[in-house]
Image 1 (spheres, rainbow, N blue to C red):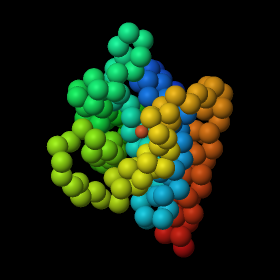
Image 2 (cartoon, helix red, strand yellow):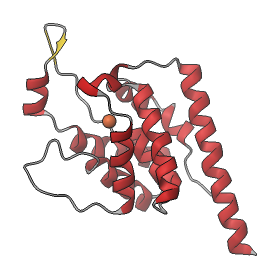
Image 3 (cartoon, rainbow, N blue to C red):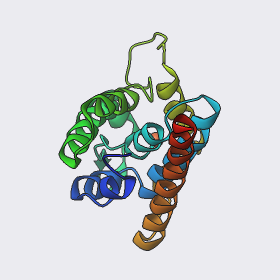
Image 4 (tube, rainbow, N blue to C red):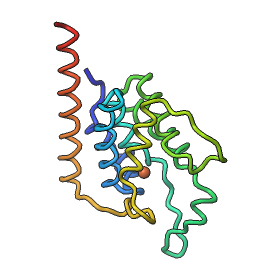
Amino acid sequence: MRNVTLEKIFTHPIAQKYLSRSGMAHAISVAEYAFSYAQKFNVDPDLAAKAGLLHDIGHYTWYNNGEWDFQLYKDNDIHAIKGANRAHKLLIRSGENRHAAKEIALAVLLHTDSYLPEGHLHLNPLQKVVALADEADEEPSGKHHYHTIDQKAALARIRRLDHRIEEIQNIKSQKCSS
Ligand SMILES: [Fe+2]
């Protein structure tokens, strides 16, 4: 049984404020990809979808004279660090289990190595799923951050994902009790 649904997270004012900075459509697509990859990598689909939804919640807007300044972004960005903290706070406030909140926050922290000095990250399966899901929705020049989605359509996709996660969890709990 889930403590917190995607809908509860998605409709929280913190998520509404910060997810729109890097694109709500991108956040939802990455949640959907992460859900799909979770089956392949034998990862909890609930954690994967939540981390996918929240992976870019730490973005700051690097505008300079009305234009996105890529150099300023590249030099100063810490969105994964900020995002891990913001996602964790939002999850705990929403009533998420502390261990799940930590796992999701770590997947947000490690979904990209763009802010790190050179080196290789050793990702666990959940972290790998979220990084792959983000890559799957990526478009050249960051275009994936600019797709728009209206609130009604966004909520319908979030609810569909919640429903699919619950279906999988029900099947698993039936198998365990039989
Ligand atoms: Fe992303």
